[in-house]
Image (cartoon, helix red, strand yellow):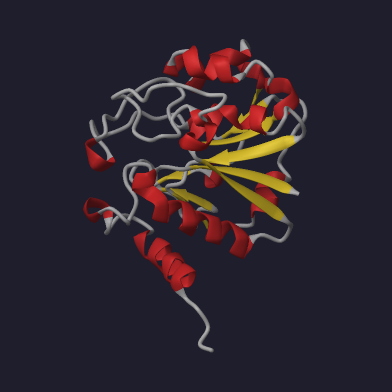
Amino acid sequence: MIRVFIGYDDNETVAFHVLSHSILRHATQPVTITPLVKSHMHTFYKRERSSLESTDFSFTRFLVPYLSEYTGWSLFMDCDMLMTGDVAELWNLRDDAHAVMCVKHDYEARDEVKFLGAVQTKYEKKNWSSVMMFNNDRCRMLTPDVVATETGLFLHQFKWLGDDSLIGDLPTTWNYLVGEMTMRDTPKLIHYTLGGPYFESYQHCEYADLWRSERDLVLHAAKG
């Protein structure tokens, strides 16, 4: 079973459902999908949202190993994405030599702001944590208390690992940043990191038509 956790924010509800549909539609193996809804975690996780957090799941993503009971592997991804490939292909890249695996982007964000006026913070390992495959048993340091109290840089720069050699590398096609890079072929996982086509300001961004086509499939119902 492929365990997928998707970041959830009330401002991007439609994004969660479209991404979930695209994952299921292309998958060739059984998949479970769990939305990381912050309000569902109030009994074990309390952290006030700061002005630097553009979404409710800025930090809850690091609770995935805990929610997985520190067993097996789990896949996290931001909700502002679209899957065009088979998630099983990504899942099969798991390597027990690593504690976590991600696309190791090497870039600096071009814009100062992103969707809904959110501040575009710039830091080393930017967007590495937007898609992560967790080898959960090797991520036991990510407890609810650590996630609730440590700094954003400590979490998003993987300082909790203590050793960057524990971070495995995934091909760029599994976290293609719209507006920040180019690729000849259609990426297998498209990331609308600056803003999804569901926001008016980004309705004409690259691969917006693919996202809208997937949305239309979500809304389709066979005539009785």
